[in-house]
Image (cartoon, rainbow, N blue to C red; front, side, top):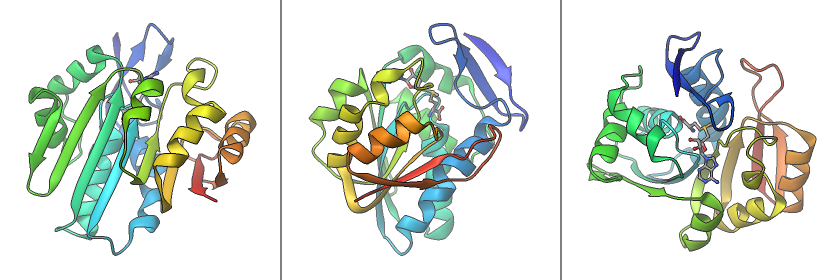
Length: 215
Ligand SMILES: C[S@@+](CC[C@H](N)C(=O)[O-])C[C@H]1O[C@@H](n2cnc3c(N)ncnc32)[C@H](O)[C@@H]1O
């Protein structure tokens, strides 16, 4: 797994299996802020408890940035995160990273503590395994779904209508799903699964990302 320094100086890796980088090379941490977390913030205004499902947990940048942003708005907000990741090799890389994300230590502690964290209002568990199967075991509903697999071409099982239908069952009525792709097939699958879609911000990769909310 080759390490790459992206344009905002944060580190990502190149996956040999997928022949893709884990993040946009225009800025890995910037991508987490702009494409995944900032578009979701409007949906959780005023909430004292926020639950997040992080699909394709990887280096945990999306979750860590979400914690930073939520606590910035409401320091006493309770945060519950469920991450799903099939590759323990990428989770292991977390231990050696120090991105400029205030609460990244929480993600590091989660990995060191057998994928579990519970301290000062933040609870995290990372489920290691295939998301297609793992998702079916979840019972709770989430305010935010951070959907960040590799590209639809290389990682198709996480962009199907049937996978989005499972996510639809897990999202709260006023919840939001954010993802980086705006491909027509992706948006059609989201719509068929019961989501309404709109454009998210355009960052790095030129096309807009996607914001999906339950119909
Ligand atoms: C683009 S990277 C995600 C980066 C991550 N969100 C972050 O903030 O660092 C995609 C991730 O999805 C994981 N993945 C791909 N297919 C999966 C599957 N079927 N089940 C669970 N995880 C999967 C990969 O191992 C990889 O870590």
